[in-house]
Image 1 (tube, rainbow, N blue to C red):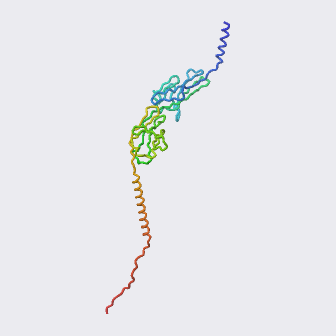
Image 2: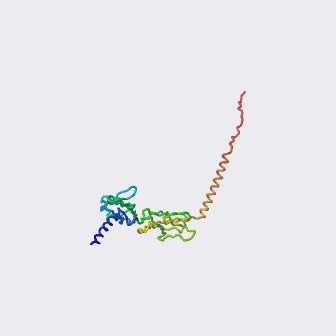
Image 3: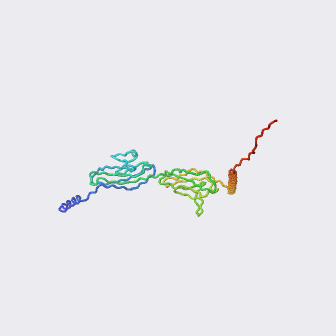
Length: 275
């Protein structure tokens, strides 16, 4: 009994001297990714020093700071499509409007440190949409032609690939390539189109979030321009310009001649008298 009586005061003394832990807040993940129209879990865990009923608040940062959860209720636009367990919030059917930075705040007025917080960033992933494609209906051989493809809604941004007559268009692995494809911007550029480039072109957008999407194929026809006709036309234009120049010079020479009026005869008026 004597040993027990000596042991109890020591335990009580240790309990009294043990340091108390003020309010602390943490999260399982500071960055959360969720597919569009799925649920997103924003975790928040806390520990308090004394306060057994701390106040829990969630706020969203943007141009300003808006309330998500306050005074035991979710605020618009999260009201009716969010739930909370402890301090962890689940947002249902998230859209791109829900993406952003959130802050979990725990207020414990009875603690020595009365406020703790942690931040969680939500990124909403959006699958590709059908890209808009700009495909010219025609061009002439030897000209520079650009085909454009763009999907402005996918997150992360889509990458692009081109097809000709339903077959993947892959730049040849040689120095004098006739076309280049920028998979980031979606631009297909022909340095000098040829007759063989005629065909139906389409573009595929993909970002790994959802199924890729392709725009409707469009036909592009390359017209052949005869070089001899171009030479004849050029020669004719040169000859016509030469004739016009000569005519102009003759006109200018004529216009510069001084005008001399014809001479007038000097005559005397005579009268006849009859005797």
